[in-house]
Image (cartoon, rainbow over all chains, first blue to last red; front, side, top):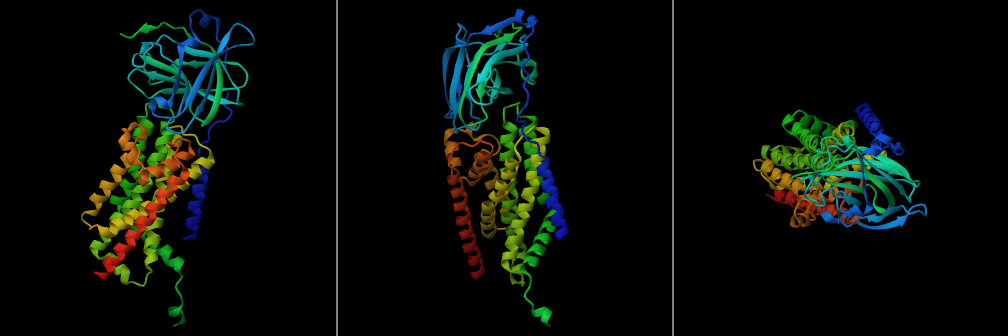
Length: 201
Length: 254
């Protein structure tokens, strides 16, 4: 009996040891876009982004947006400061782009190849979630990128979002979701590459 | 002679009773198969196959179906088990046997914890392999520990039900408590999807507080104080233990 208990405990210990852990230092793809992509890009002005938080669903997270000059030059970036607070099962806080200008209405982004942006954070590392919402579906599809304290170009391939109908995208959100507490990130040059936006009638 | 009069080894009695109880239930597939497979099957459907690629949904549901899973053996092994044994007369035979009453309770708690552990391991396996759930070792272990210890208040609830209910009505009554409680506590899908009045009602349910306690480990709870959840679960445990003791002595007088 004692031997059986010892064997069971050993099995359980090995099982827990083998359970997978999150990757802490996953290298994100920050390749520079090619010149071909540049020919067909649709730059999004930071003014087109609106604040979004889980207050929309009854949560308590907050966010404020402000514009600042980048590298003392004319180019201006969007500074996103907020706090993820407990109060909703999936807390989020950040910015959202509504391609149709309406939460309910989707647009056809099936021609869009990727979403690119320059971003950095004031903290050591911050995980930024890129959420795509399909029309009439309030559950997003998600990809993440790791931000560092240096400006870096990030590219999210829209084809990586499997099981989503890209002919009716209603919302593209760039939000913090994982860690409760204060966050800050800066974002600039947000671009949809190789895009033809077709109104979904 | 000396051997007969020697004090029996209490732990040996506890272990033997636990072993025979476990064997009995393993040999009763009507109990063991649905108890183990229901939470795993539900998680496969809603957490893996139809999670709609939603962010963190597999992690959230792995925890909540874990809660759903550990409540099952606690309520059924105690609630239905005791009621059926009372109906068959086994309970009375065990009562007059030299076995201490504590061994009976210990065996059922051990049985509940064994089944709970098995369900948790299966859910963790499904989450890790098929739904890409990634947690730190400390989180995996803490969730498992919370879920296993969290089944104890439901053992107390089950024991009370088992002592009050008749063997014929026990399975239906336990199901009538188990399934709606799981639904209203946000164990099948996030509580925030329910209307406000239902969310307020969940505050009264022990399953909701156990789920919130476990979800705190992965930062997906609703933000209420840890001590509130613990206090509610302890209050339920003491209340139902008290009711169980009352029911036991009432039965004895009869």
